[in-house]
Every structure is written in structure tokens, then in C-alpha cells.
Image (cartoon, rainbow, N blue to C red; front, side, top):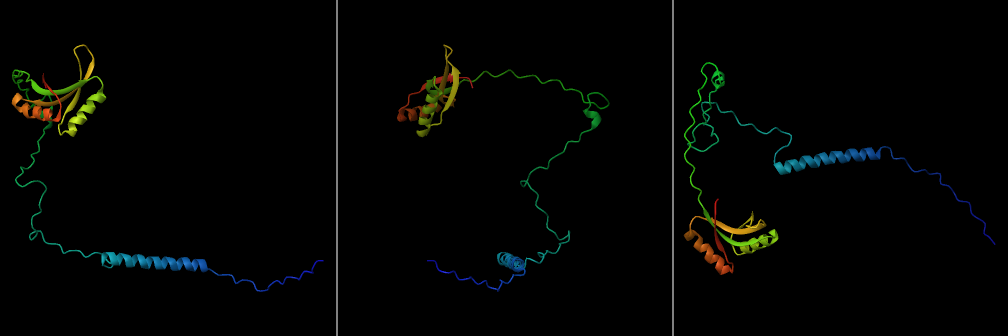
Length: 189
């Protein structure tokens, strides 16, 4: 048995169409945003953001104090060279004559410097490891790459240079306290 269905009534009231509610909402939002922005600008600057900043009156040049220029007090002014075209050319009127070359002084004898060599390794990682251990002990060392007598590449860990054995003595005692042994090496700089 089935029950008879009741007819559904359709309402004759249609929803009212909103005429421009979205546009009016956007307009109100823009106006409120502009008001809030102007209020925030006024709050943070404590001045009217729509007025030009006040200008200070100009002081006549006679009453204006001197302007401090960059540089240190007592610096000499920079002198610009006056180049004349015809004196620069190698030939022509007023050309400069070449001065005689100065006598070269004899080359000084090479001075040997003293280094404390703490180690020499074929593996550069071992040299860096020793250099790091020295740094932890507060000693500044350098690793240098060179050739040994039999032609192999070695990485030497050295401290220095020192100009005299007396200058080297405190460093040797610091190395001995840290448990490092060092050899004195003479090398040209």
C-alpha cells in the first residue's frame, strides 16, 4: 500500500535582489582604509601628513658660519698637476729630456730567517691536523708545501720567522710545555 503524495506548494515570494551591495561595501572599505592610514600616519609622525614640512629660513651668506669640509684638521690641500700638451709629447717644443738612470745600489745579501719546524708530512690532512692542534694550544703556525731532497712533495708545519735565536727561545719553551718538538730551520724569506 502506498500513500498518496501531497502536492508541494511553490512559494510565490521571490528573494529580493540586492542592488549594488557589493559595490557599496567595497567603497566603504576603501574609505575606512584611507581614514585608518591617515590616522596611523598622524599617530606615528605626530604631525599632519597632508601639510608640507616647515622650512627653515635661509641665513644670508654673511651671517652663515663656515661649512666644515671632509678631512682631518691640518691636512694639506691636494695639488693638481698642470699638464701641458706639448710638454707631454716625446718630441716638439718644450719636450722633457729623459733624466739619466740613477745608479742602482748593490743588492743586499739575502737575510736568512729562522723558523721552528714542528712537522713535515706527505699527507696535507696530517699537516692541517697538526696546525689545528697548535692553534688549540694558542700557537700560530703555517703549513707550506715544498719538495724534499728525494723529490717527494712534503707539507711542512712551521712557526716563525724569527730574526734571532734569542727571539725564538720563548716559543720553543711554549712548544715544549705543550708537548711538541720543534727543529730550527734556516730559510731565505
